[in-house]
Every structure is written in structure tokens, then in C-alpha cells.
Amino acid sequence: MTAAIETMISKLATWLSRHSIDILRISLGLVFVAFGTLKFFPGVSPAEALSVATLERLSMGMLSGYTAQAVIAGLEVFIGLTLVTGRLLKTGLVVMAGALAGFFAPYALFFTDLFPGAPTLEAQYIFKDIVLAAAALVIGARALGARLVPARAAL
Image (cartoon, rainbow, N blue to C red):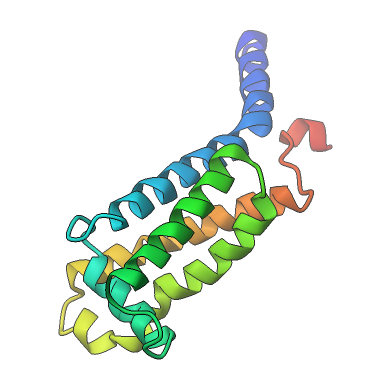
């Protein structure tokens, strides 16, 4: 490679090591705010029925209907705002850990409904949460002090 290309790659790696996790944190926060906000409006979220049924089961009926939906919406918006702003980030990440467990709970609670043969659209909707969980792990590592450094700087 030419020296100019190597310099560009080095500068890009340095920029990415400084900013990529913050970009990931903010974009993940925007996803949580967007999906949480939808849940404040009955009938708008495509996951409303499944999320309410899940929280009803997990709370043993103590939360149901719109109350369950509002709790989920509030938690998701809170998580999103902590990610977007970086304030109360560790608290938001702890809440997110619980929320992610709840996101995957329908697989255990409603498996036959989600997989009557081929996976339903709702089953696929939940499956994408694996990416959200992986992003949360990276953001959590950074919040606990881990750093991403370019390979050349690490040597």
C-alpha cells in the first residue's frame, strides 16, 4: 500500500476507535425511544399484543392491558434516553438487561404460537433483538471502562 492510503486507514481507524461506540450507543438509544414511544399509543405498535401478554404472564397478572403497555413504553423510553444522552447510563444498562430478558421471554412463554411451523413475523421481530443485546454488551463494556483502540496503537 502507498503511504497515503496507510495514513488514511490509520486516521480512519483512530476516528472509529474514538467515535464508533458512541454512535452505536446513540443509535441504539434512538431505536429504544422510537419503539417505546409507539407503545404509548394503543394499536400503533406491531408488538403490542405480544408485549402485553408477556408482561401479564411475567407479572402474574398484576400488570395487564394498557397499564402493562405503558410500563413497557416507559422503560423503553427511559433506556433510550439514557443511551442517547449518556446520563444515568449504567442504570439504563441495568434496566436494559432486564428488558432484554423480557424481550426474549415470549420464546419460552408462547413458543408454539410463535413457531406454528415456520417462524411468525412476531418470532422474527423478537429474533432481531439479538443484535440489540450484542450492541448493549459493547456499550456496557465501554461504560465499565473498556476501550476500543486501533490495532497499531495497541501494539
